[in-house]
Length: 360
Figure 1 (cartoon, rainbow, N blue to C red):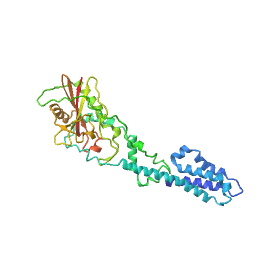
Figure 2: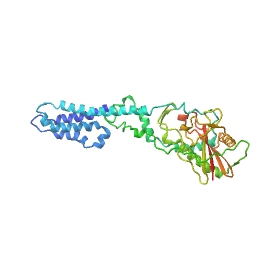
Figure 3: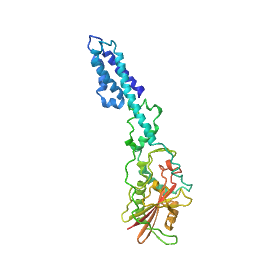
Figure 4: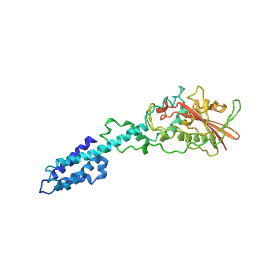
């Protein structure tokens, strides 16, 4: 934008030069007004394209107004015009430098980091069958949603090239619109992680349980899908170049307790498959939040969770069982196509599961 702005700047400066007549003639405003005043009178358009030209036109307008007095001591308008151009471009350069210095600070505050250490790659397993992939397709659509504003600003912050100075806002914003501000990069506000609403239900190995009927399973599956959307929180993904370069990522967590029509959720526990040799259930007084579960105590799977894990590994979306006063549901957490960017592996990989305890 710096180089492109030189063309209209020279045109405005040249118009001012020929408008500045020697004494005792009057200033030829008719030569300057169509070019200089025209730019000055269209601030919305010019500020969006070349704000430096607006500043230059304004300074030249003042110089021409004072020219009848100035020309008594200065016989040529060029020194005055060039001084006005240097002032206008000096203001633009200061503005550009200030913005780039702020962007460097923001890059340090929101750096590109690797997800490899905090997100283990899925273990090689047979890819889920068509039932699981068909469900995954319906789950991926809400996660797509295009680029959010915060994500696009993080992308701009980390993809600006070394010529950002000459393309900066002060010289013109047609190719690089808007400044990047910390307000736009701040994580969106979310409620605190809720506490576990009630006590868990554990079914020891050897104790029988009854599978839930199909209508009830669909109700629980719907609850699980909504819970996954809240847990993944699309707006918190930040900007992702690849698995080793991610900026502004917010750790996955629940912000509310999922609901169903006739049952109340009393407990949600994460069944982890990646960090331990055998599957483990993470224990917490709050709903699952990945930052909180680092180093959290674990327990082995009980009879229901063991049976449910077998079912979802075969491709089921979830597994539901009940006793007279309680229902339990194990919902699969599979890698959608958007998840592969950070988690690695491939679409359909089983990343874990949520074990729900529900009571009437």
